[in-house]
Length: 505
Length: 99
Image (cartoon, rainbow over all chains, first blue to last red; front, top):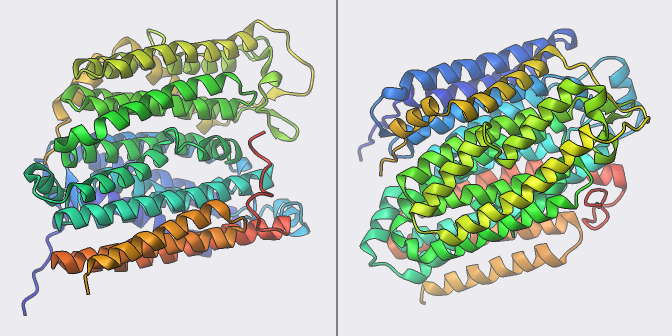
């Protein structure tokens, strides 16, 4: 019996491997470095790792598209673009996460116990949040580039499991935070069971675990269609859960509200890129020839998602919940890029994901700044008159909201325009009409918040805007500049994406 | 015996698990039902592997077991923490959010 030595192409895999190595170093730091140095060491390792990984992605951007790791992973144009977006968004998220005041000093201690108080007083802050985030990021990097079922499933769990834990690490309102972790975990595991069964049926249909093999069976059309349909349906459930599309959205408002705000921002932006990246790859390559079977269902889900997200967001009184419903609506807009199933749809989706991700991290970074003595204030009624007390913070937040609403001169407008015109070209007119309608509904509640901040009198209840730390300030400034720059000069990024974004099959 | 019977068994187990997740209240039992669903999917993989005469399905089953074990570590940590702070592992009691 002979063994074939696997060829891995370490250069092309290096962005993911660097992140995993950084995460493992982070675990060691957590165990062995003294508490005074730990926080600084973790932060520098994490940022260093991310920057190194990003430069590596930049270096390999012009390599020829190819399958690596024996056909388990593909590095092509969309892979480079998605990985770079995930890394940029992770770096600016880490700057907000670095403000350790958001995280519990000792996750294992009971809320309100002596043990917890003691570790806060002695400054014994644990910093496991950094390695957990790095593990989640490496899962996110792997998810959209996986080209076989095993890698896809392992990457899904690699990005999910750390996020379940991160959701439960909030310093204040710890019971709510733990509750959000429980909900996220149970529903996430439930959906990954569906995902796994769907994969089993795809395997049964095609007798192959690689995307290329499944695609060949779909194109050939000789297999049992029932197996294919069950497979597509169940795999879609798993993916739609991760992006938070209706009717699989139940977790997202609770998790967005309960999780520590920097984590919410990171999760909302980066998970969406990873999950939509995988979704685009699977639908554009593997399922493309079975479009007749999934396109109507996915269009219906997209329409319901857009309208539901926009309508329910109107009724929200909590800023984090409102942003959660807004992200559900955005998942619907992004689904129209998947439905488009053409080159323009792919380019537009990648641009939209990046632009939306940057604005989301920025918006949640602003939310972390509005506080009273008990921590963050997320009740919208207490945001009244914020524009009069802290005009800069309120203006920045207003700009992010306008970008979410898709007002011209912001990145949101370009993203929406590109994605809807791609969907229109492909003939999905109902989706486009529903999208424009729900954008109009959504504009209502974004603008209501702006009116609340600028045109109502402030309430005197101790709500104040905290002076941002230097790193948080960098994030907010970077996000606002990029949001406006991509709205005014989108052409360079758009043409960069258009040149690079082609799936290899 | 017809190998397809194992697929029916797997579908049955998966359904029992899914119904269990929806109707049971204790987080541990809900979690056990999810594990049952994962194992049902494993049974499908192994059956398809036999039907297709291809070993990859059995390899996936092993990977799934490892991933399920990791999920147990994370899941039990979260559930135990919830139980310690609330003295209850019922998923209905955890309703601070969504108001």
